[in-house]
Amino acid sequence: MRTQVAIIGAGPSGLLLSQLLDLAGIDSVVLERQSRAHVEGRIRAGVLEDQFQALLRRAGVGARMDAEGQIHDGIAIARGDRSLRIDLAGPTGGRRVCIWGQTELTRDLFAVREARGGAVLDEAADVALHGIGEERPWVTFRRGGVEGRIDCDFIAGCDGFHGVSRRSIASGRLETWERVYPFGWLGVLSETPPVSPELIYAGHARGFALCSMRSAGLSRYYLQVPGGTDPGDWPDARFWDELRARLPEAAAAALVTGPSIEKSVAPLRSFVAGPMRHGRLFLAGDAAHIVPPTGAKGLNLAGSDIHYLSAALIAWYGTGDTEGLEGYSERAMARVWKAQRFSWWMTRLLHRFSEDPPFDRRLQAAEFDFLAGSQAAQAALAENYVGLPY
Ligand code: FAD
Ligand code: PHB
Picture 1 (cartoon, rainbow, N blue to C red):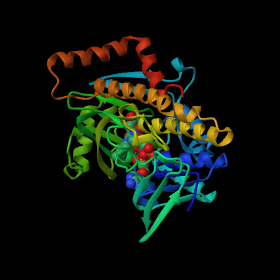
Picture 2 (picture 1 turned 120 degrees about the vertical axis):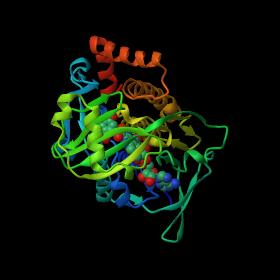
Picture 3 (picture 1 turned 90 degrees about the vertical axis):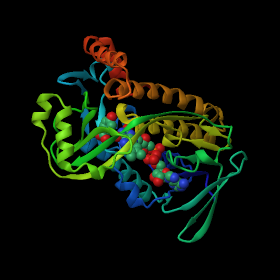
Picture 4 (picture 1 turned 180 degrees about the vertical axis):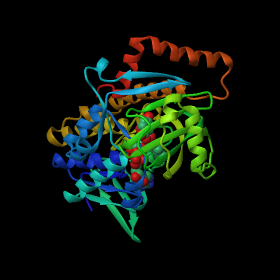
């Protein structure tokens, strides 16, 4: 089989890239290790920056997001019983985020690829990358017991943190930077009305909590838990009691509880690998970087990578211009590092770090006080939360 761009991974990065390339007349094949049903069923991110919303519209997958997603122009940041509303739209010239689950977005992307006859080969095992330093790289895989080979011009490594693409780069050619946090987030999805119309990021001496949502009848809540926590140790009643204990009083009183329909633990990590280009291989999204979810940046960074990468490939196929491909890594990484900084800052502001000496605890309190009293600090938070420019 021959294609122009072989794309590894059918998460948001891979599917969106294949769709944008297709709209520009460029052929691709997406190889996905899991089944389509598995990928569509994963509960992950929920907050989309306005530029990512615009990118999805351009890709022709904005209709359901625009009809059913919720536009938010503020968030709450709490500490104990104090709650602070951060205006997102005012200081950013009217920019807003959209609450639209990654699950829904992924369904729309699969559907549009199918409708346009795009090749998305799921349940592809043993994917291996070859010749990434050469002009004609190729990918091999096994599907339904049959060996396959795809010859291509470029390979896009969109296969997430545990994928094969990053590991295919010769050792010594890739630099990595990492910070692993000693805690994770226990997430619960429940068919209950959200506790508040806007997200609440709550810092508390017992640990961080987040109140988010997917729709008027579907809530998403998270609790900071120690690394290695088993969700089985958290029956629903324990989860709701702990959440109530960490929220400001008014929110705790308003919380509507019900049975959870999903419960899982995600570890927290900050990770960057660079450069994001090696010969004919381009890394994008979680394959190259992970942020702790506190700033809601993971999915949005996948979006900006794909914006840069799709534009670079389209320019190369259109006019032979190599500038976009040559500058891809630098451009994408500059934005990644700023989002890393913001995600780290939000994480530091709101989580309980059990190893923190009393001095650091006081600094954390002062950081919140400063934010509460400074329009400039609130504007900086808003600017980062709605997303730095592409
Ligand atoms: P992924 O979505 O990881 O997609 C990569 C795809 O590649 C997957 O479908 C995978 O099956 C496939 N793949 C992997 N290896 C191979 C292989 N060898 N061959 C073929 N295919 C392969 N972000 C937020 O902003 N907020 C959140 O609350 C949040 N929660 C998260 C919870 C979890 C458990 C995880 C893992 C991530 C979370 N994120 C969150 C991050 C966000 O979901 C990601 O940033 C986003 O999914 C990145 O998209 P991606 O397409 O780059 O990678
Ligand atoms: C979510 O709704 O899953 C969500 C929202 C905001 C975050 C992280 C996760 O910062």
